[in-house]
Each structure stands twice: as structure tokens, then as C-alpha cells.
Length: 124
Image 1 (cartoon, helix red, strand yellow):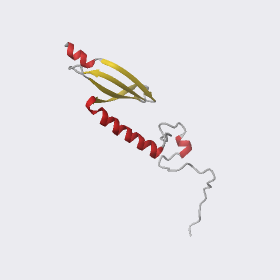
Image 2 (spheres, helix red, strand yellow):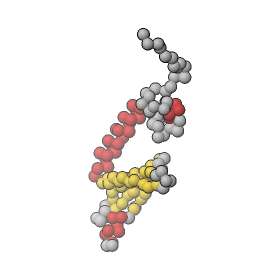
Image 3 (cartoon, one colour):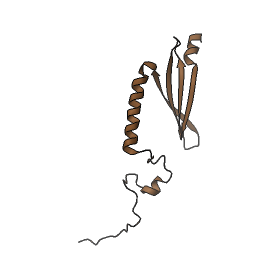
Image 4 (cartoon, helix red, strand yellow):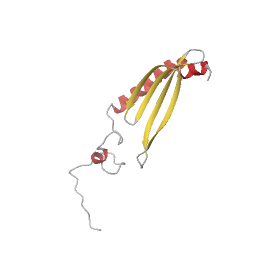
């Protein structure tokens, strides 16, 4: 492998964010011209029925000429989500007692009312 190819693969600075089944890798890398760019990799663990597992990875290459616009849109989008829905996580995958709290049918929009009594009416 040529020396320039090695430079392209070299990680200059890295950070890792572990978030449940997902891990995010933020890596600063060097181009052949020795300029820097950022890669963001999402790695998600999947477990098979037999207990084995595999990872799926998705990668974004972000070049410094796009940093300002990317940051502006990311800030706008994250602010929108947090302003609209708050910081509380309400999805089934993040709440262990989601089905118990919201009922077995995932399409239920509201928590089960504990005072509900099931009654049947005779046909009229």
C-alpha cells in the first residue's frame, strides 16, 4: 500500500459515543493532500436467534467546507425535536416497561386506564 493511501486511512483524532445498541464513532482523518475531514460512523449490533451477532455500519463523510451549514441544520433540527417533544424518550426500544405501561397493542395511543371495567351489552 502506498504511503499516501496510509495517510488517507490514518485517524488524527477520535471520539466514541456508546448509546445502547448503537455506537457512534467520530474520526478526524487526513486526505492525500493532508487536509482534514470528519467521518461519523453508526455501528448497530444485531443479535440472531442462535445468540450470534453482527454489526451494521453506516458512515458519513463530512468535509470542512460543509461544517458550518451542517452544524446550523443539525442545531435547528435537534432544537425542533427537543422543543416539540422534550428530552424524555418515549419509544418502546428505550423503555423496558413500555408494553406494560401502554398496553400490549403498540398502536394504543394512551396509557391503560386502570379504572376501566369491561362490560358487554345484550343485542338490541
